[in-house]
Length: 118
Image (cartoon, rainbow, N blue to C red; front, side, top):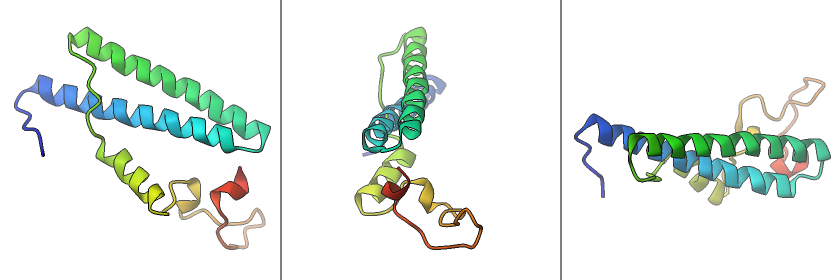
């Protein structure tokens, strides 16, 4: 189940692969968020962030090329955990942060759903 990494090159390749997996997953999520956003300003921001994330993907793929390695999208436990939490009904939105749920008046208020803000 687990790979044994024995050289610095293997460790670097695995780390780059994990970063690539994270960026590709983030890019997909940003596309979904843009598709579901109802406000034009949020659509624009998700699209802009997606463009930046696409550049991250290209940079990582270029790093593999410069190292003479095949592009490898190694697992990324952090992003897999976030996706699992979202799939299980957990929140991967900003509303899961401690500051979430505060109304603009600062009175505390309850948490809304992510779709309430997009």
